[in-house]
Image (cartoon, rainbow, N blue to C red):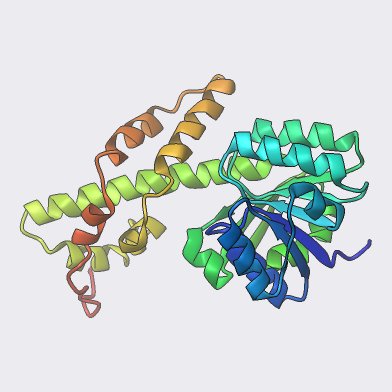
Length: 280
């Protein structure tokens, strides 16, 4: 199996640029394109090669990683990639999009001899900068293994979900539903505790030792609330396409619109008493 040494990145924003830096540190040649000049310059400063178009990146890369905002942008960018990419190129969709979008891209790519993986990432911008993302990958196992070193460059946990393209997005969708439901539940619980005269910070420290422990509980003060509306709307669209209903997600979507970053931080501002030892 031919080793991949050249990776293209399309989308050099808050996620794509730090992922590119980690790929450079891992020894890959990284070429990239972003419509914003400062992002292009940042890649060059990191040691990458900024090119002037999607097609230029696709022509000169063995694998092309997509990290753009939404389904419409993924379809637009991948169309340009498929026009220019050589047969055998691997197209990696790391944007969070609908599984059906990935399957649509894969069908078009197959006609041109291009392999597709969907590999959305979890844990956000801070993990991208630290190189500790979680990668949920879907697609042929052999193609996944060929790209494993790419994922290892910026991911702490890399999981192959299933052989069919789109399964990584299913995992990311489930991750997002659980995350945002957890954020709403933690905020509501801490706010109730405060109303009842119990320190939210001390309660939060105690709950981390119980069955309520979760990423949302531990990381509440770092949650940015950047993407919940997009994530939950997308989940509802995917569920509708599958003929399913998501009653909890609908409630979470309504409730999370009432929250701000300041609401979350206010309940976690006071120092946590980490010496507290909860009883069973």
